[in-house]
Image (cartoon, rainbow, N blue to C red; front, side, top):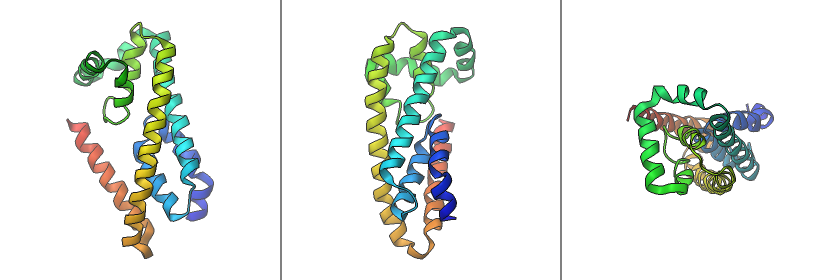
Length: 176
């Protein structure tokens, strides 16, 4: 199992982080503490993929406004929340959106539909991604120490517990 994780872990993390990546980066942090992945590479991979994903969504909305509006129709309340956050926090919403489940993909789409500066979005997205990847990556690495020390002989049970908790939290936020 460890060999499989070493060979495919970064590729899976890259693919998962393109659309969000929080859970994937947390699992990668725990696996890094276990010695199966390198935390610095995991943070770099998740950060690059997350940055590219947000840039893709922003550009998609900028280049194809009708398609982006159609995508966003399903998420009425979340789109309204995204607009409220954009008005309240301005450019800093790019940083906030990395930590708020449910609007992570909507903020870049909504900003792409406006006349918001592409250059400004790139800068804020880069800063937000670096902060997000470092905070989540190192926090999960530290949590991995706690989890794996308490379940030393069953490290994958500890990882499964972290994954189950994150999925449960994600489900609860999805319902909100």
